Amino acid sequence: MCKVCNKALCRKCAVEIDGFLFCETHAKMKKAVEHAEKEALGELEEEEYEEYEEEEAPKAKPVKKKPVRRRPAPKPALPKQKLKIRAGSTMTPAFVGAILGGAITGFPFINLLFPVWITLGGACAAYFLLLKASSEQHVRGYISTKTGAVVGAISGFFAAVIAILLNVFSAVMFSDVIRQTVGSFIASPELSYWVLEIVMTEQNLYIVSFLWRLIVMMVVFPILGGLGGALAAKLTK
Image (tube, rainbow, N blue to C red; front, side, top):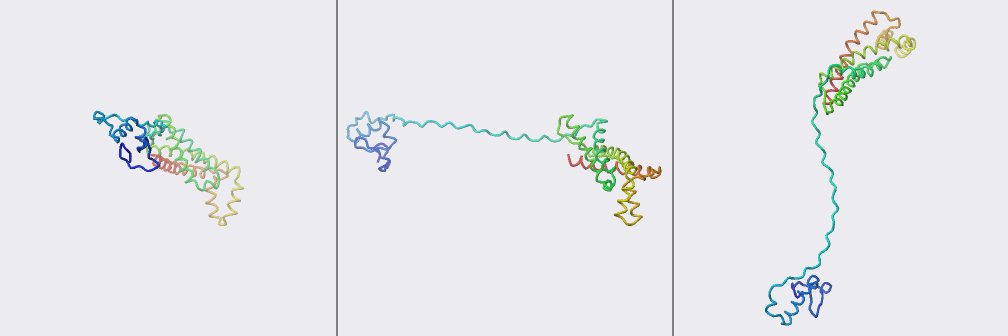
């Protein structure tokens, strides 16, 4: 047992000084060792029974901890603001959507899926308007469903003009090829006639046929474009 703290010791941790056993901690404290030896030999005077300051054991060097780099907390996303659309700012996005939808619809056979192309053109027009207004106003915003429908409808109107011009061009240049292709796949003359009516404009450009096609496209395409623009505005809110 340690002569100072009476701690139980094993042979490995016991430190012997002048025939007395001490623990490793108190063996390093000279005053504690001397006090314990004198007390054991009966040589300790009464004055020395008073409390004494023990020598402190050597302190371990503080380990420098590396500063932990913490990632800054992500900033909360700001709520979207309704964008202010200036008069006339819808024309450029509308032309972009019209070129996309009208150019595809102007080609034979591909124009059989004209509802899809014109609706996508209106949606693209609304999306480009959103990007344009957000860039100008430097905010994260959205456009109303009404605004999306308006720019989509304008896009459908211009798409009808582009599509009819390309359709006339293809009818004049490739009419025989288109008729042979339709005839080789469709045996019924009546069905073949209706498919040709949809696929291309009459080669002789009869005024009644041309106006009928143009009026139908001018009515149907803005409706489809407006639907696409409204859906795009709704989905991007």
